[in-house]
Image (tube, rainbow, N blue to C red):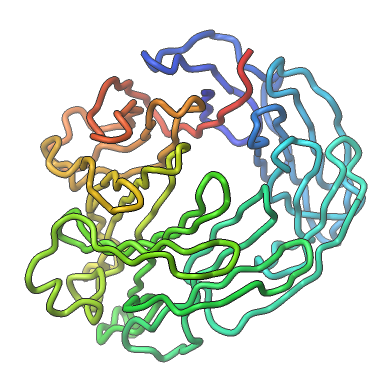
Length: 393
């Protein structure tokens, strides 16, 4: 595992997977500082390659305003540096690091034409056609190995006053073809107008369920989490056919939540937004679900609350562990990211401790047991960090 405090390729420091301390003071990539007015970095799924993008885009846009450096994920040696054939925004690398997936600049919707570039030269190898769908996107997840896109959609209703029924669709990114589309029973989500006004403007709220694709690309998980307890509903869907495999409740829910669901869905009030995140563990037998809520106060500032994380065993939706009430002021935690270890033994969580009970406040990296979510090791940082899991030396 490598951590960095930048997006320009500098400062990638190897971290010991057990103690979480630096394994070396030397950064992986020979980059001292970034250039351009924007930078980003992506890694191949197998950890063999890292691409660093420095954007200098202005008007009119030309391809020379983007410089891409491709580095070896093991040695850090520069493999190639080039300008792409056409102006693009880079979305990611192919699993083996040989191809760059991108869209034309300026940034477009996920449905826009995708360009596949040679990762050593920037030459356009293929153009994947633009497509469209009916409805508004709630959330989406990609299967990069299978070049599939899965999207939760609700009916397009700009003046909606509550959550809408949800459909899940699958698309082949190579062809732009819709593979299937199904309704998710008893699930409502989306964005709507509340009855509140702030400085004469309407206040919106939203519900975003969790969506995850299994490591082998064969299953999808859709998750609704309740706002006050570590419980909710889990749908498993066959990714190839779109067939609903199962719908199960997990954890505990209160009588009122069972009585009114899905009409109140995840939120405790109509002007509260709830976002649920879900991710499969590498063995495909555990799903990690976390949620947070936000509510705009009278000054227009969002008040955030962490709703907790649970480890859910599959396929029977058994709750294996939870971080609810594991520490004082847990509800003020701000989870930045969650990642499994490369060997599938540990779960890493990077969070910011905030609120009156956080002593000291600040950023923390933790190594957890992936089932119980018990904290096994932790390390504090003075600023946020981004993770990259690269090939072993």
